[in-house]
Length: 478
Ligand SMILES: *Cc1c(COP(=O)(O)O)cnc(C)c1O
Image 1 (cartoon, rainbow, N blue to C red):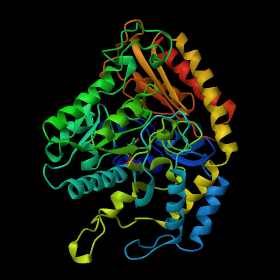
Image 2: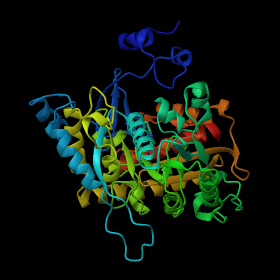
Image 3: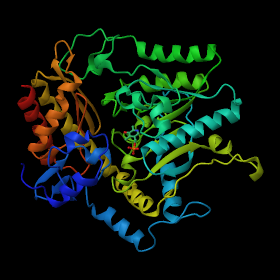
Image 4: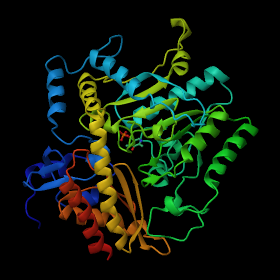
């Protein structure tokens, strides 16, 4: 028999059901019980220290126990923790909404920009997490389309292959990860899919594998974009147009850190707009400076502003569950009317616009916006690029995809043939377990290991994250 579990671990084993976890495996091993954090470091009940190399599942921005975020929460606690948004307004939510609308304005377009004019996001609907932010966007788009184009045919959605948009029923419906979604097929509505612009595994990419990001040496004729165009044309022909196109800008996260080649997003956005479709941007993972550049939102780097934008994860700097769906004025206006017309958006949550969440989100935005903060993120991203370059020495590294401070490292059996590991071989999980033994915490998505450091990560800490990854790949896969 194994030695006795720590009392907290024993309680966890007795009663906590963990997300996305095979609980039989979970109950076989003593879990790491985290108790403290500071900056990029987490500490467990045994006093062991770990680097938080995936920002506590992509939520944390400025590190743990950031003095300014802690103080903002204490200040709000000195006033009130939560009041209802039903029939009442609150200061933190009102101020945060204004600041989000302001941050969602893209930097001035360059004079030679030839993309279609962008809409302006003016309204903010608060909810609790990424799934509910997407759910809100889907309902708004659905109802907007019915009200502006008539109820028939029922509005439909188009999204990207492999997409993950959350776990509520609507969010699962527009997702395309069969492993997660098959089980609930009977509960879902149908959403069509277009190919993911996944250069490394694209059937149209004629380039032989190189030791570089597949986007940089791809040989194709944008067949993925042609596929999007023909999907929209088919929908028009059959008189069942799409209400909205749902996408993650610049990089699909849970799909496997699939980075889009520059130019993909403005091309598909132009096609969708020309066909009268709304754009729903899921910036739950990419938002708040994660993907680099002068703006806080990934779509801006490609000059695309959506009609609806879902935000969560980094919104509170990783402190509290809070989400927001930003919408344009025309979408908002479609819900206006006399009380008895019942055009109201009948949707909401008990904790809508929670005061503590909004207060810490405001402080997080204030930390993000100065140019100095952007320079720090850019320096860290450059260091990450240099560090990741050392991984090409490992024959089991097939592709390295980095956008700003997100990186996915795709492991393969044979890089010259791009042969994938079978999922059951747990190739990514085993590397992450080896990293944990080296004091670095992260999680893989199938065969893709993720590095997503908090923005406060120091150069020596980033070096330790990358070398733990390098040494773990060498240990497990040679
Ligand atoms: C995590 C995630 C979601 C779901 O957010 P939750 O807060 O887990 O509900 C949706 N979309 C993207 C892109 C995500 O990364």
